[in-house]
Length: 239
Length: 347
Ligand SMILES: Nc1ncnc2c1ncn2[C@@H]1O[C@H](COP(=O)(O)OP(=O)(O)OP(=O)(O)O)[C@@H](O)[C@H]1O
Ligand SMILES: [Mg+2]
Image 1 (spheres, rainbow over the protein chains, first blue to last red):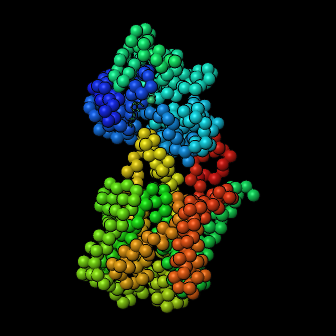
Image 2 (cartoon, chains in turn yellow, red):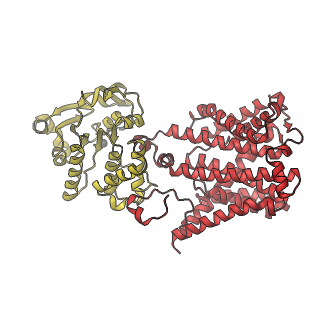
């Protein structure tokens, strides 16, 4: 049985159809990459999966349950964790506390164990050194790492990552890839939106291309990248 | 002196202050006991309002609904069912908590200023309804039966212990209850904010959308705070009117006495800081003493101070103090585990 199913999901903002009858499935433990030009509707698709935005049409199923009308917090509890493309830290809380909220509420971890659990994630994401720093004072790169770490702290079965590799050095990107591979190795399913292609293809098993809200293609990364249609639009965003 | 030893010192001072306050009925005058009773009850109301507005973002101007219903429920218990006033205080708290459910149901659909207006309208509706309660005097209100407070549980013992009149003993009793309620409210508030609930509230305050996305249910958490503070406010209302001994809709549901003052006290002391209301109530008390001879001038001064603070020091006097000195009396921070070994205190 698939972990996540989107069934003809559509969403418009005014006259602009941002998500156009998108249907696909993600198996438990699978890693799926999403690419597409700016404004293609990638982040909106995440918001539809997490419940931050309600679809106009279609259904979202998670773990066999129809969650289309469920609010974000119950989807987190069910196992959908997310990062935001524009980092949304709890600015007055410390980095550690940012994770603790997520572990307490979304992850269902309590007491001392929750603290240990968060420390472990901070180690894995390279944030242990700033654990007690107020998150409002972090640099953009640290904020992006915090997005990843906080999503991990909700103990998701499916983690949604929205452009977390942009602006990294070669070494930093390598470390990030290792972290994401380790998440994947634990059996967590991943959907990762990323413009840094080589990072994406080193992790994901399938690749989806979105364009003008439509799912243009989904399949093996090599196959997808080799298709003429994709080459055409992808040239558009590489430059 | 390090910040943590400063904080320890402040804690010792706080405990000493509570002990001195507890001794007031033994060593102080009766007028002082009555004065400080009012101050302590205002503190309880301010602590509750601060939790509501400062931490849960629920700026209510209808808390008089819970003071009033607490008072009326207590009167009902005493007059209609012959209860002793002390257990009737609990009745007041429970009644306020029950009333908070329909009020939350109605006002939680509203945001910001509309929420504030909604709470005020709700309080007015409750006031008008209480004015219909003929058994408790309708619009003009009623008094506790003569001798009720002198015969309260515990008054006889206090009378013997302190060697004072029954009315002084009953004042001492309500005073100690107010002190207990204030200390318990402060501690429960602290523990609540240190718990995962408090962390959730702070997350909501910073970023609602992100909070929802890590599993926090803002509505549920806010409703919990609304109901709990209604309980505390109702207890306080019942206690207040045992001391006042006379209830009427206008007095029990006074927006000025039970909400406006309380807002000023909280804002001056530091909204959204735990010790803020304590500082605010001290300022209020000192002004009242110093300016008592000038009639209501102290209210004007209080208002001016409130406005100046709102403009220039949004975290109030306590916020300014913490910023300058680094002293945190009741820190809400959750330290990461790597600091645990060096941190001896187990909070
Ligand atoms: N809340 C909203 N209200 C109105 N329009 C919106 C809203 N959110 C997104 N849009 C519009 O929908 C379109 C798709 O936005 P979306 O953020 O999903 O694109 P994206 O593929 O993530 O782009 P990028 O690569 O730049 O992140 C854009 O044209 C955007 O302006
Ligand atoms: Mg996007």
